[in-house]
Length: 308
Image (tube, rainbow, N blue to C red; front, top):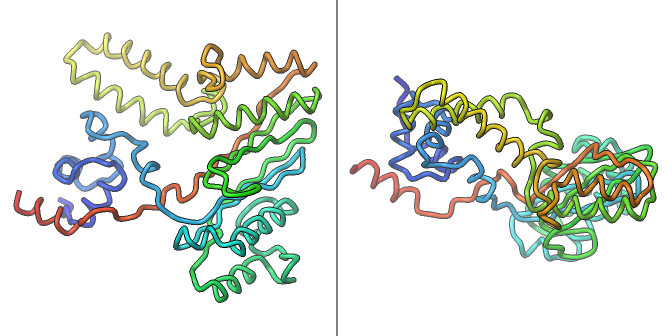
């Protein structure tokens, strides 16, 4: 049997948001398997899968650069928020986003591209900035969207300046319609994505492994009711339909007008634009997402568990 170490309990706690004792019990029940333990906690109603994102803690900035039919979003991390408020740091992340427009949008390609102001690769320019500012920095993530016909709309939430902030969203709309209408509905959809963080554009595009994992959790929750398997199957099917509605962009209630789904709002805009509008891509970068920061006395919690 796998040894349930303090480090294992800590990892599960950070990923699930559940209490120490619940994490220890989940690991014991699942032979130390982290993912199985998360599902066990969720099935018991103790944990939610989205806890981790809310605990993100890295500092820095997200920047967006766009050129109508294409746009990029990049995340440059720093150690402290103080540095993120530095003009030199802000100029650097804006400059990196502009450089990224001429690449394929990957971190590797951006890092290797020449930064105009220094004449050096972006990676070396960041190293120089580290030496000057005296704090570690990392080009952590990036995304690029491009359409041949249409627009790539952008949105920055919690803006710290022009094109920079804590959360950046891109949404690509394929259409031959009026560009002003496309830009307007595109920005609204981008704002919606910032607020709801959908898993996919359409229900059928939700990752199969994610959907299967969700179904298994629903099955375990339904079995807790003690109902017959035939009833459980119907319950699970209903919950899965609701799950897809909640996580797929086009079926979500539009935050700008909850009486419409996002799909219906896009269709309405298409009539105004004079041509069909198809949402073909989206990207959402929340600063520090997935990076954990210790916010409590873990040693004291471990001691409490050991005594229990």
